[in-house]
Length: 124
Image 1 (cartoon, rainbow, N blue to C red):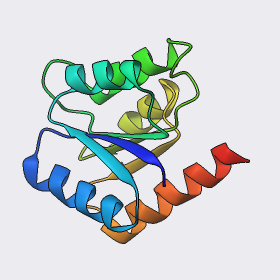
Image 2 (image 1 turned 135 degrees about the horizontal axis):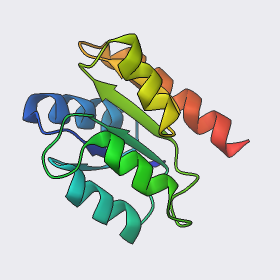
Image 3 (image 1 turned 180 degrees about the vertical axis):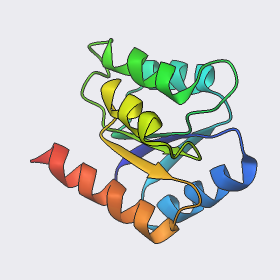
């Protein structure tokens, strides 16, 4: 069982992602803003972080940069889950250190497969 941090300010999306990942056997900690998500990750590094980009207090991009900049979380895989679908948005996401980029609306099954894939890559 992997520990997954989810941060999204939309309660419906956050609940859907949490449910799907928990249903697959993962332990999920969910937050509605980037500041709380970052504090939780720095306190107890997750195995994967799934971050919305547009959140209050700190964006998912800000959280990703902070995770990469701290030795405790520098290797935590980050998946950005966002409505920002322009090529420049995707490029920026990868430039700040994201391991994957998923555009909303999304398939919960695809999200689970991508989380599983990034976990497999990082555990090798």
